[in-house]
Length: 436
Figure 1 (cartoon, rainbow, N blue to C red):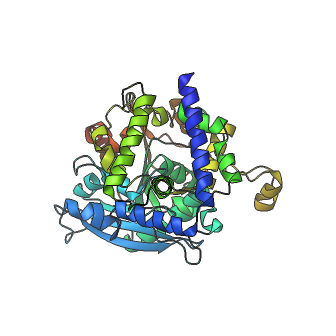
Figure 2: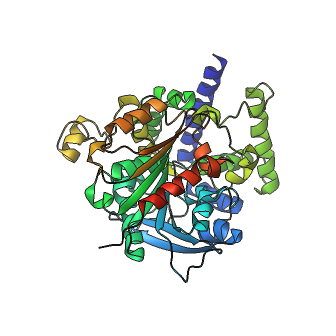
Figure 3: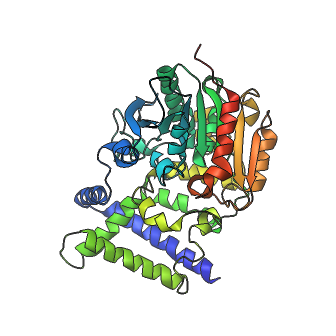
């Protein structure tokens, strides 16, 4: 009961905070953006910030989607692999919700999948979907435009993933291995129902695979859904979900109206201490609260909590409210379908009253798929994963890790021996196909 009340109060604070953001001046928002840049070293791109300092070769690429978004792609290779002989097969990494391509390089070279694949000779390509920090905007829209954020995972699947695969295939003259985590698996499964996209894929490895969400056990997420927070935010006129911006605004908002001062690292540290103390009270004096993350993702067995401060230097990335609404529709309706606009607009958009489903039986039976899922995953529940497996025309290679939660598949300290080695062996068994 106390937990439910606390979560309700926190949600109310979020709504109030967001409403304050809407009423803020353009000057304040400019200060917020510069403050975020000050806190994070994004200048120079993902290669300069995370990949090259680890001793890996990395190049930045910009591609354009059919609807005008400019996406960032990074190409990564290992210094221990002789590229002059021949590059290995291309593999595309697709990150999850509120993440970017940096998610694949958060730990050491022996623990991070991006580095591991490069060291095994793969030609690693790192995807970043629209709206995330490593992308480059739109050909005509500004991030401050409402239309810039008028998309969900549907567009990520049909436009972003299509553009990434087309570019990589043209650069390498080869079909592409795809690795997705969480939202990256939603994108993949939806996209693979489209023959022109599936034809560019050699094989796919899906970590915490999601196409159905109606059995999730995350109490935090279910509270958000039941409170219809997505609809409340829509009524407030919010289109972008930028959690870092909201946090930075309130740091500035607080100090602007309490004392005239400069927002520097010392003030940020004080603010962080205040947040920690609030969490401490909420957790009855035990700050980790049996891992606060577990309330969202499920209990993670092997997540290195000592590196959270470093992770938060890069995560979370922005997303759109429409994307969140689409995910909440999946939870409420138990469907894997296109975005539901409501009866009238559905007729205008799709020519029918209900949004068309993404039919998993349309995924080619010949497409090799490998899946890894966990018994403690509160977002990719075992029942929902089995639902997905039952609808696929093929029988994927499946790895079940009973003690793994949602984040373990990305950040487990045991990930190589538990699953990445298995995945790499699967890819090697599939071979490679040159472009025809």
